[in-house]
Amino acid sequence: MGKNKIQRFAELHTFPNVIEADFEEVFRKDHSLKGQWNTLRFNNLQPIVLELGCGKGEYTLAMARNNPLKNYIGIDIKGNRLWVGANIALAENLSNVCFLRTRIDFIESFFAPNEVEEIWITFPDPQPQSNRIKKRLTSPLFLNRYKKFLKHDGIIHLKTDNEQLYYYTLEIIENNRLPLLASTNNLYQSEFRFELAGQVQTYYESIFLAEGKSIHYLRFSLNGTEEII
Image (cartoon, helix red, strand yellow):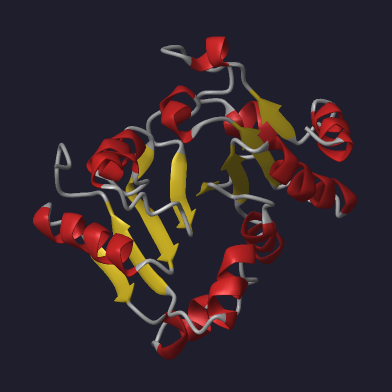
């Protein structure tokens, strides 16, 4: 590990807007903030929005700036990346945003039923290998986890450059008869471009656009089924 990374990890432990959890704290256990994010962390009753795999937090920060009446939590396992977003949030005194360093596999340990209003999944690993499909963040395995804490009318957003992941997720939505609220395989040429394209782009999104790739977008709810298959 480089000197810069070591220094960032040390600083990350001191940041008041970063929550870190050891494996022992959350493996088959509930974290102390579960069900208490509004009261113990944000000190308000505003809706909570998650970004999964937030990287350096560009998108999380942009949403927090644009929507001060919502609370945002960027989640990633890479502490070196989270340091960037958390540092910016502190410098800008953004009180409606924080960062959670954990594996998304443990997400159920952090959030209680009806605690989250929206989830953003921005350019996740498409897991193209056939033996890793269940690890996709829009697979039934993960959607059923989100269902446990997402509000009844809560929304999931997916942005990806990966066509396979886009159509895979669309098929799950259709097979489970989930409410599909928006769908496009070319965001910047669609009717949703004015709604979404104006927000800051993620690091990877800007790279994909520079390469001429299309950005795919889905917005859907998990209402309508007890278990997603």
